[in-house]
Image 1: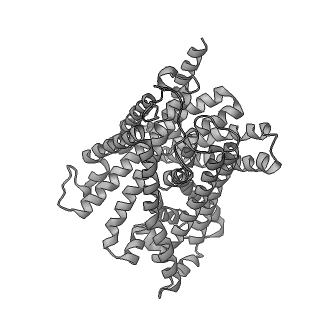
Image 2: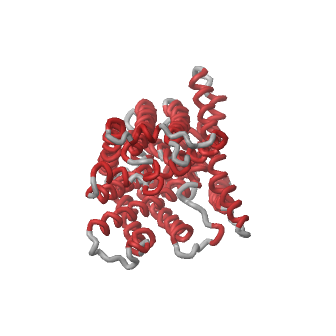
Image 3: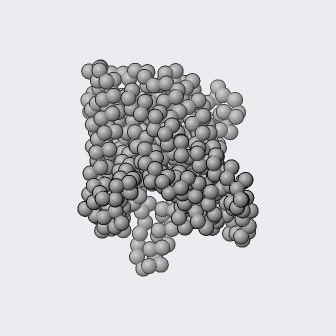
Length: 479
């Protein structure tokens, strides 16, 4: 064994990690959600996508500037350490390793399994599940759970044993998942404009929303888009393995971010050109594909969704296998001499990778118990592990942006003040929106029903316990 990760990834892989980890299953169905939130107002939905994209690009721009200055192990931890000190960097890295990476990875394993089974049971109706597909077998059945764990293990094996293959897989799945999105964007817009019904023009002329409600509808729609834009920060986890990182990582973040916003926006418009607003609200984007390409394409779309989820799973596992290594490489956390070891053949931190896989298994068990089990194992205190960790990361961005403005005295006013300030505004919006969506709204709904429910509160308790465990190891090291 020896320490140190080699430079094995290029710019294209980094861009595909940015694009591939953000664009997962949600983009195929977000058109329905956004139209529901805006009550069929298409222009308002476009504004929501643009605002959500602007928030992401503001944060990306600030971190792209930092990426030109700092490079050690795991970009976000590097930036936290450089701006707020080693202790803050440690807690950020600890959170990423124990909560952020494994929670999202476990959810994507389930989504990959879910849409794989949907494709199989639709293509081959004779396939019988223990719980029939019509009763939710593709979502909560034992076959789905077993396939989810299989995908987790396969993603781990590819990243831990053949990291270069994992990079090629990321590039391939990213290009594959873009095919139906670009196809819908181009064909849908053209047909929607020149078609006999002029569907796109009709949808764009919507004017039924009352002026006084526009603000609240837009806020709800932006909240829905905000989570669709998350995942790009994963690309910074390979900065130690990216060739010419200080040049290529900023390019990957900015180019990847622009591609994501363009894909989301034009796909949304293309869907609106292939189906009426009422159809999209009731049946989702699938009806748009069926209207344009016929019934045969309906199940093919499920295959694209499954491949899209697998690509996102691979990108998340890529970061998950390096999570604890980023802490151990700084001689911090539990047994850093063990978790900082890098295999001489695979050039991967195998011990940290195994630990990351175990954490994925733990959080998958939690996700099933809190969100999928017929009876919630955690009662009123379960929380959605697919979204709340994302909110936390935006809260952790804020001190980084604030301190960067103070420390970056070698930069001009735009890069030193304006870019981080825009990142702060975007991060604050995300935190406030999430507190409303996951805290205030569930609490008010439960109170009207004479009950109590506050998922954010339980999540904060779990977050505090995890960070206290991290503090124990930090204190033990100092002792």
